[in-house]
Length: 254
Image (cartoon, rainbow, N blue to C red; front, side, top):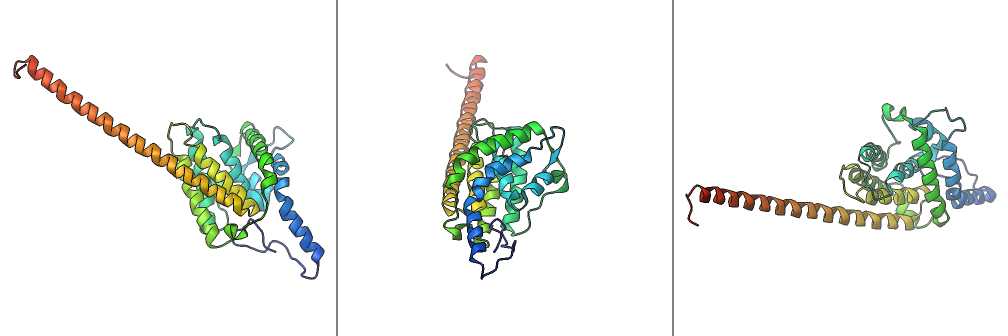
C-alpha cells in the first residue's frame, strides 16, 4: 500500500495480498482518518504550558500528515475578512515552499531557521482550537473519491503549483478586506482534499481558486481605474491652476 499523503507514492507499510482482513483494516483507516484529524490536532498542544513547540516538533508529531495539516493550520488566521499584513507574508512564504515541494515531487523541505522557529503557545492554541473547530465541521464530509484528481504525478504537480500561486496572493500586503480570506479558503480546501484524497473537495478548491482570481482581477482593475481617474483629476486641476495664475497675472483674457 502507498502512503495516501505522499506525492511520490512511497511505500509506507507492507500488505499481504492473502490477508483480506489487513486490506479491510486499511480501507477502514482511509475512511476514518479525517475523523481522527480534529483529535490529532490537540496533540500539538503540550500539557506542560512551559514546553516550547517548534515547526520541526509539529511536523514530527504529525508525521506523514504534517504537510497538509500545516497548510490547514497556517490558513486559520486568515479565514476572516480583516487582512493580517504582518502575518500573511511569512505564512504565505512557508505555504509557497510546501507547495513547490509538491510541484517538484520532492520531500517537504523548509529552511532550518523556519523549522527551529518556536511557535508561541498563544498562537499555537489559537491555530489548534480554530483549526479543530473548522475541521470538526467538515471531516464527516471527507472521504476517498474521484481518486484520479488527487493521484501522485501530474495532478499533484498541478496542485503544488496552484498552492504556490495561492500562497503568493496570500502574502501580498494589500490592506483591503477579504484579500487574505479568498486564497486561504482555497488553500484549506485543497489541503483537506489532498489529506483524504477527496476529488470532490479538489473540485471545490479549484472553484474557490477561480473565485480568488476573479476577486483579485476585479480588485486590480478597480485600483487601476481609480489611479487613472485620480491622475486625470490631478492633471486637470494642474491645468486649471495654471490658467488661473495666468489670468490673475493678466496674461489671459477673462
